[in-house]
Image 1 (tube, rainbow, N blue to C red):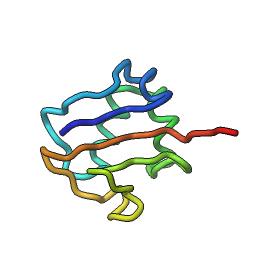
Image 2 (image 1 turned 90 degrees about the vertical axis):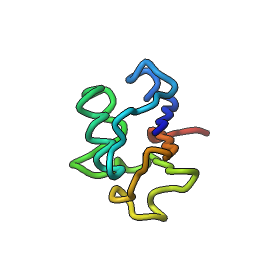
Image 3 (image 1 turned 90 degrees about the horizontal axis):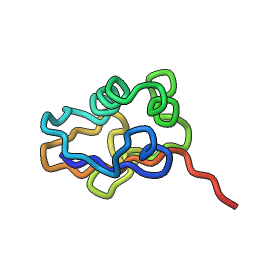
Image 4 (image 1 turned 60 degrees about the vertical axis):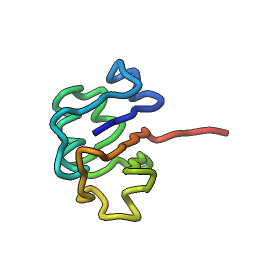
Amino acid sequence: MKVSYFALLREATKKRSEIRERPAATVRDLLNDLVAEYGPNFARWIMKDGELAGFAIVLVNGQDIRGLQGLDTPLTPDSDVFIFPPLAGG
């Protein structure tokens, strides 16, 4: 499974992307694994009280998980996951 990080998450992970050898079963499992691995600097942008943070975006194979099964969206070894922290602009 390929996981790509954007904006502040690149700073938190020190990576643009990575291949996860042990793919998680669901998006929730993946995010919990990533929080455990990368700590509070990652967690604060992506999770809040066990749920996806307000304006954070997670895409699986190009589709927003909010239009799928949310955090319970299943993942496969071939999944392409993109994780965006909340973005602001003007």
